Length: 342
Image (cartoon, rainbow, N blue to C red; front, side):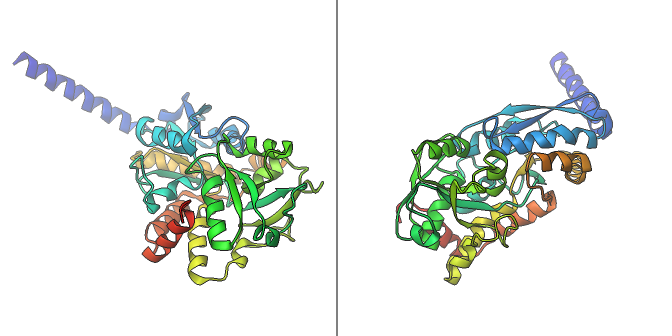
């Protein structure tokens, strides 16, 4: 009887404590709190640069003005960070993170070793809509897209599920390119240095925003040949560079490419664990949007040469819902284009 009474008392105390927690206002919860920003790539990477710019300003837009620390959960092309955020991190709004833009699309293609649902993740938003470049180093024989359809170009791979590996495969299948992937690089920032040393001949997939912020001299000093980009429109800074979408003519292949490149709407995505209380989801999303409209933030981002273009959490949700219902024929073509054994 005493055992049952103790259990009942403990359960009542837990319920009372839970009620107190849920009764907290956002300001009460966040005041004096140190939040955690989980970054899937190493310090100094483009994703880390964006995350640090965000956390420098976002606390001011959260009730209670919390501060942030950064935690690096690196490995497996972002899967370790996603697993931490999805299964381990507290589901209370105290932890957010950033992962590679392509990762949430993998389960729709049957690649889901973590067994997670991208539609359950709390998507806070994205800091931009990305456009990525394919390029060769200035010493390479490959100078143009046409050259790339005739000659191999050695480019880096940073993990079996990483964009740096799967996207060049798709380009080879859908756009007739001849990228040869050399695996084993930790990240594209490291691979860029290897290209400068002559270990690699080019980069198949690196964001224009990263190139501008990390290697701003490459384009004006003609250190690279820009072969094409993946945006939906001409890029004002480099209007001469062609769009890969315009180089693919087969209708099914174009649909498959559009599915693959949908990840670029999630240029620099930020997320929180699933099952957050609704009021804290609203706080994080509102603070994220307010930060990206903040004049002080925009001034700092411009100094750092970071492209900023707000994508809301609702927009991210819609992109992923649309991807989850793509026609079977398109999914089959996407899978075939990403296969190393085709």
